Image (cartoon, rainbow, N blue to C red; front, side):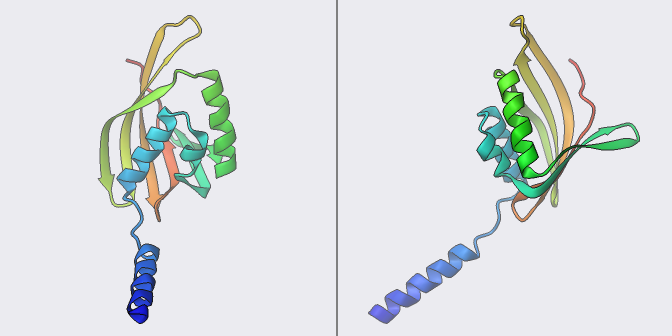
Amino acid sequence: MKRWLLLCLFAGCAAIAQAPSPTPEAVVRANSAAFNAQDVQALVATVAEDFVWFNVEGEKAEVQTRGRAALATGMAGYFKSLPSARSEIESLTVNGAFVSVKERARWKNKAGEDRSQAALAVYEVRAGLIQRVWYFPTQKP
């Protein structure tokens, strides 16, 4: 009996160790949910340590943020300056490790007026973490 119990415990641990990574879509959705909760720790938990965020404008792609720590600092400041900021995924397409998303951000300006803009982003997800994201120019409604 003890031998069987030990075998089961070992097999269970092996199954846990081999648990599959979350799907790229699930990772992007978790990232979005953390953004909406303004939970910086949960947000950065969805990205790789060497994460890179690119802003794409025409023929240029510039690094906006490099690294998990820089993202945490930047997002903490962003949430402090825009406590009403929320983002909604309007459409999402998965192609292997790449997830393209049309997002709509909403917030209130200092005068309390509602504001909104849409953006296209492409996330690269590997081993359950966002490695890179490319953000394209925002579009006003």
